[in-house]
Amino acid sequence: MAREEMTRRRFMRQAGAVGAALAVAGRGERKALAAATLAAETPDRKPNVLFIMSDDHTTQAIGVYGSRLAKLNPTPNIDALGKEGMRLDRVFCTNSICVPSRASIITGQYPQTNGITVLAGAIPPARQYLAIEMKKAGYSTAMVGKWHLSAEPAAFDYYCVLPGQGSYFNPQFRVRGEKPWPQSTIRKMKQHSSDAVTDIGLEWLKNGRDKTKPFFLMHHFKAPHDMFQNAKRYDKYLEDVEIPEPDNLFNPPAGSQGSRGLGSGVGKRKHAPWQLGRRIGISPDLNEREYAKACYQRYLKRYLRCVKGVDDNVKRLIDYLREAGELDNTVIMYTGDQGFFLGEHDLMDKRWMYEEAFRMPFIVRYPKMVKPGSTNGWLINNTDFAPTILDLAGVKTPDYMQGRSFAAALKGHAKPKTWRTVTYYRYWMHMAHWLAVPAHFGVRSERYKLIFFYGCSQNGRGEPTPAAWEFYDLENDPTEMKNGYDNPKYAEIIAEMKKQLKQTRERLNETDNNPEIQAIIEKHWND
Ligand SMILES: [Ca+2]
Image (cartoon, rainbow, N blue to C red):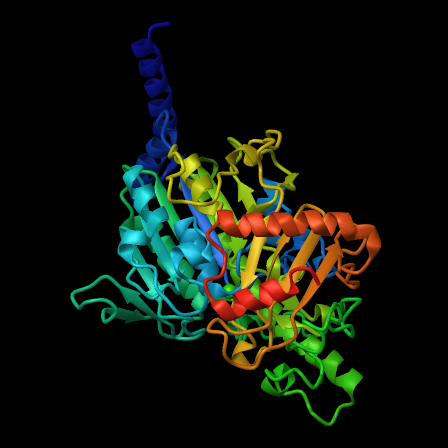
């Protein structure tokens, strides 16, 4: 059959389908339905990409990841995306805090290359690479919600972003307007942030985007970041439920002198300066055990009520795509900007290279490519997100990106022999924000993890903590209860991982120029 004839027949089929749909649609719906249906079915059209990211939403609080909290059914709508798509099980961040994670996602680069190692710093429009490349690839682009990269998100066609962390209630948003960035603002009164962000995302999808093009929407929730404030309708959610405790609620990190006694958590420990219990109204008169239990229950309920608001709003996005006939032509990704401790090891917050904080949820639904109910275990990190999204849009990974596309994983292909065997991590903000997490770096393979706590601040000043190594066999010890660094059984593996750690730091431009830190590394490398 001649190509023209095929095209003509396909057009007639589409026109017929649209005509039938129009016959039953109301007058108001007709125009939108016709435009959406034609857009969705245009041959060879690139897929839409809806990238949904929440803030601090960890795998333990997503049902499809099967943790102790799954029985509470905290995220039915996000779970549905996983069941209709793929759940990725070994996705990690390169630095477990908000700004560096977002910087790695937008640039496809590690912290020292993109310049964002701590919570300060900006990614200017000229380096908002993912947005720039998607626009070049013919996409209508938008960034909605928590941005947190300081500079104007001007590389997007449209933006409406929270200032910094933003507010949970009556949130203000920065918009493109008559006044120079960041002075043009709007405020959503009487609204919770998760609802407001979704209203804005939906309004852009319905009326803001250029419907002659595929869309790329980065839809970023502020929730469930601390201090956890839920929409009023969730006040009673889980009210009478006893939240299951982790088995290691009363086991703070004891891996080495580099981590022992540090970090902030739910208990009354001496080194818990952030004082979660005081902030959420737990009586200091309770004994240690009762205090930790009460604090854990209240902490989890507040967190999960925020998660519920995110999950319900994810459904609103899905419902719109379904109604618009674009659900199956859209790659939907769901992630959180890093993991989070929910009382495991008597810890809260993130920052640590331990699994709960280091691991990111990542779910992808795109039935044209991704097999429903599939899982994947490749070692992936957040510098890979931009290369993958670009790959799905038909764009080769730009040379300046350090991450690698995992589109082949989504297609169910075998892992290439050249895929990374370790993923690199570094947390820089030594003992910052009363959360008392010491600076450290390390590598994780599919099975093992090696961490070096160098324990000093970026400029080498400030109160140092002891330098120490930790090693975990995640197959035998998935909750990292036992440091295997001195176990002779692992000596060979540790020597090999140290070599990989050194090589990885060199290859990724992640070595230290700071002489104080360099001296600590050299002094303790062979400990
Ligand atoms: Ca975060």
